[in-house]
Length: 326
Ligand SMILES: C[S@@+](CC[C@H](N)C(=O)[O-])C[C@H]1O[C@@H](n2cnc3c(N)ncnc32)[C@H](O)[C@@H]1O
Image (cartoon, rainbow, N blue to C red; front, side, top):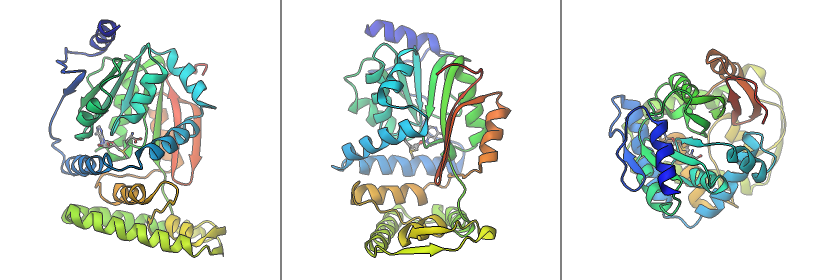
């Protein structure tokens, strides 16, 4: 089987890629300052997070959320979909746990995880036992794949961190097969005070040391925890001009959605909460989108939504060049 997997991989790329243990580094640095800063902080995030004992809980939470984001009724439904694929790409795979999940669910397909950070190499070491799983370190806005070579492209929680999300979407749409699907997630725009603070902070995060960013992430986590522990609900009046939604909500959620990301989740644990806050405030590339903007990007690439999901934090869906059955 191993030779078959290599043959499928070789046939999907424009130029031969020399692999070492199913891993290759395509580029080392990005010419764009913001992208390079984004890569550096993600390398650091994954390095630190790989050592926590909260990983398995986080992975389980992410797998459940993935099914919801992309309209799969169950893991079995995802397995059925992936089982029809010859080649699957996990674009922006981080530590590779979703790529590994896909590779286990579709043992006959080749799965390629790509990440611009050092996590791609770590992923290839963590999941080396799966012989249908390949990893590349490189830019998902410039992939090595031929037009239409990939049956399922997954770009989960990544596109807004790339230098130009529009160009990245176009590239991932280019490699999606005519009868394939491209699953993509976009951060949603939030209330005006939160957007203004997020944008302001992002302009300055390059001037802050990574120690300071970790320290701030811990402080934000502590704030989220203390607000949650109040267990106070408030009945918020709707303030449409500021994008503040009305209704009964917990005080931590009210601050979180409208003013400041101070993530805290007791069940996922402290390390995961700190990393989630770091993940938000440290990368200089982190665009947010309105639903109209997402739908325009999809349409500009001649794609249609096979599924579309929206929630407070994000828009996500599976997009296709043609309307294809699930
Ligand atoms: C929030 S993490 C999500 C990781 C993974 N998809 C998951 O769901 O856990 C974003 C990832 O996107 C990667 N990334 C950002 N820009 C990229 C680019 N231009 N090319 C490849 N990966 C990129 C980062 O290195 C980081 O690992």
